[in-house]
Amino acid sequence: MVLKINGKEKNINSSANLAELLLELEIVSPHCAIALNHEVVPSLKLKQTKIHDGDNVEIVHAVGGGI
Image (tube, rainbow, N blue to C red):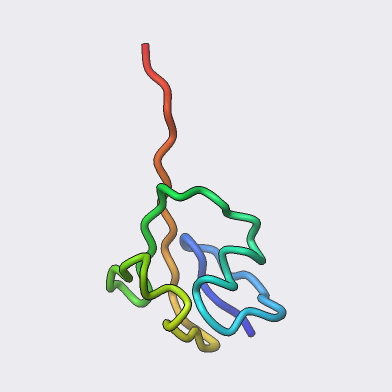
């Protein structure tokens, strides 16, 4: 299936839900926010939220640092 992830089209092989997608993308940060088709998905619902061909996914994660 093809998803648009952070504005770029990407072929996804085996993910059926957002939790599996994060694993496939090797994103393990506990401090990330995900929107599916412009709606924020709570982290407790990632396993329950199915993804479909053509969906738009935005993934944002916090990065530590400073001056």
